[in-house]
Amino acid sequence: MNGVDYLQTDAAINHGNSGGPLISLKREVIGINTSSIRDVRGQMYEGLNFAISGATVQAFLDDNLPAPPTATPAVPRSVPTPPPTTIPAATPKPANPLPALPSQPATPAPAMPSTSPADVIRRHYALINAKQFDDGYALMSVRLQSLDSRADYASWFKKKVDLSVVTISTLSQDNNRASVESTVDSRDLADGIIKSSRVTERFDLVVENGTWRIDRVTNVNSTPLPTASQPAQVQGNPDDVIRRHYALITARDFDQGYQLMSSHLRGANSLDAYRGWFANKVSLKVLSVRTISASTDRATVEAVIDSTDRVNGQTVESTVTEQFVLVPEAGSWHIDQVTRK
Image (cartoon, rainbow, N blue to C red; front, top):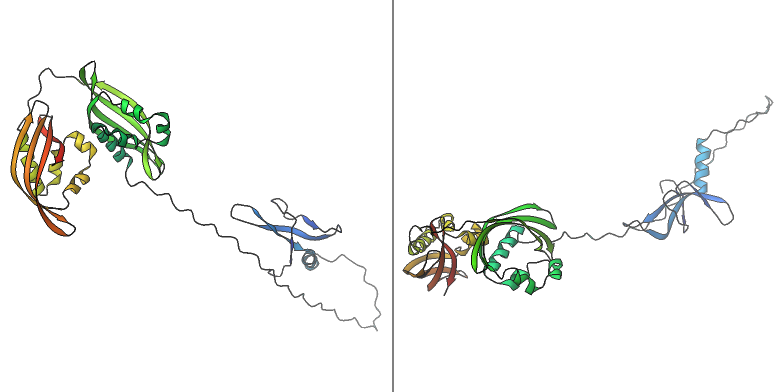
C-alpha cells in the first residue's frame, strides 16, 4: 500500500504497541507494529493486525541513512574505475484489501410528546373537577403509581369541592424532564365547612412511552382566601351571557367568546382548543334560551338552536339542545360547563 509492504498477524496490537518490534517464532525481528482494525465500539477484529515488513524498513534505512565511512584503496591509474552499479527499484506488492468496517445503524431520535407539560397539568385539574380519578391516575408516572394505588390517588381529592386554575407556567423543559408551576383557587370541605384557598403547586414531569407523566408534586404555598359575609351582586343575568355566547360564535369573534368562559374552563382548554370547537360550524339560529335554576353562586341555563355544520365535506342541519352551568367571577356570569343533550 503506497509502496509499503505490510505483514498481517494475529498477535494482538493494542494502544501503545505501535512502533514496537514484531518478532517471529525464530526470535527474528520481522516488522514494526503499526495498527489494528476495530469496529465503531473500539473492539478489535480478530486476526486483523498489521506491521510494516522488515524488508520495507531496511530499504528505508538504506535510502535515508548515510553509509559508514570506508577506506578507499589505491587504484592504479591504468585501471579504469568501474561504472556504478544501478540496482533496479523493487516493484511494490499490491496491498491486501482491508475488510470494510461494519456500518453502525443510525439511532432514531426519540419521539417527542404531542402535548406539552402544561397541557398535562391542565388535564390533571380538569379530571379532578370531573371526579374522573381513573383517567387522572393514568397521568401519573410508573414511579408514582408504584408508590400510590388508584384508591390512594382518589383519596387525595375526596374532600375537594372544586378548583379553578389561575395560572400555569413551564419553568424548565428538555427532552426527558420538565418542571411546571401552577396556581389554583381550591375549595375543600373541612369540618363540614367549605373553605377556600389559593394554592401554588410544582410538578416534575418525565417522558414515558412518548407522553409526559407527572412524577412528583410539591405544595409550594397555600393561602386561605377570605369568605365574604354577603355574596357579591352579579351583573346581568345568565340568559344574556348565553345569547352573547351564540352571537360571538356567529360573528367568529372567538377571542371575546373565550372570555365568557370561567377560569376553570379556560384553565382546562386553550384559546386554540376553544376555536377548534367551532371549526366546522357554518351557522346557527337561537330558538330559545331559558334559566332552569339560579342561586348566588351557580346558574343552569338551557338553550335550543338550529345548527348548520360541515361534516365529511357535507352540510348537515340539526336542532340541538345545550345545557350550560354558569358561575359568578369578578361580578359577572361565566360559562363553567356545557352539555349537549
